[in-house]
Image (cartoon, rainbow, N blue to C red):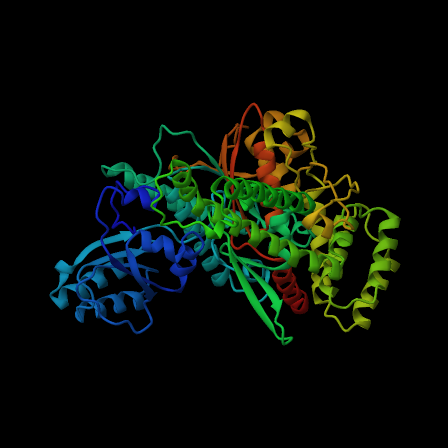
Length: 622
């Protein structure tokens, strides 16, 4: 799109322009498309693609009549009117119009009519439906940016029209992701919830697209000869506890404790005068440390950042020794030295500097995480949540409640919710009353608990029929590189870390999780790899609906055969989280002899705090 929709455009913007002259242009966005772009591109990336100015379509924009413009906006009447107004005013030389998703027939005809009245139709060079109405933050992670979906779908006051409208929106968003991945998947979904409605709507949308593509010369959705993938659409009630759990995984902790939105981490900091401000860190695609450590437990990642810093210091020391300078900053990048050794060093300098910046950023993030961990006793909550049926766990939890701290009341409530939802035999009534009294005495809103007590009924229906499976065997260790995930049950061991950052967290337990699948992974395994799944899990998923959009009629009426798939898109309606994402990725990477590829998406990637607010709202209404 940024290269004016040329088919020769590659993924690497720098390489794309090596063979041709850069064509400078203006990029005009709206709020929705800004969210889509900001997670994958930074200002420097736009510059590499020839974008010198980018601005919102609703803002007043100065005319640049000799420069082309690329619009990337939602297909709305307001945006069409604004584009036509720009055309009337000759604001730009050529107009390349891209919509985030499908522009319907009525709006397209109105756009054409308005353009024809201006007499400047020759300036409109392209009109594209880009099918990009979703946010992707990692190659296997996406969301539709529809927060509050769980509350909207489960609110007793929601009208049928509102629910149907939201399900239609979700189906449209999923169609966008399928168009981008060029696939016509088999769709599987449980019955009786929003997942069933979305699956039916999406199946119809894909079927219409496939039929129309067959009748035309080009197919928009995937080649029939390509390997089929499975799209598994699930309702949030597949597993509630994962939405509240405290995590010990680096990426999960950053998302839970701080604000991680569209690959930007926002950390609160105190200034010298005592006031509060925010510091933002961008996670770049080439952030080697994040890519290698985001899925590891906090102490292990902390050891690795220390190792990365030591490696950098050794390399920098070697360079300064060879070149005779006292510090890397003394090297001149513009030096014309004829020394081959010096030229090689100067060429390597930008790469070394970028590496040091990444290491420094993660050192700062670890320091901030550590401060929160110590002040709120987050490791204690994590440890307690692993053994809900132990009486000692309940005793320990009561001790934490009485620790005198009030800055972690939300964490205390979350841990109680996890204990309540995961205890196999149910928590003693006296214990529940004592906990409720503690929050009431501290004047903390417990509306969420009213709904949690109902949630347990759903949990019993879904989780009791799913059988957890250990991933802790030699093959899975090799396949996943020994990665550890926060999932299911854990074997906890204590360790000490020494030196640098390690010395800072030497008092923190090095909790090593045992590899276990969680409910969503059990479902995915049963549908993707039935030969290696348990009978219990297969019996649960055999009842799921089956849609094949390539079959025009009756595709979901026949009983589906158990079939293996190597690729899957897993989508949760009502909010997703990094815990499920990491557990799915670990399972996929543990399949040594038959590798799996799993993409994970949701209506929105929701923090525990946000989900607590949603169910608190539902609890107060019920």
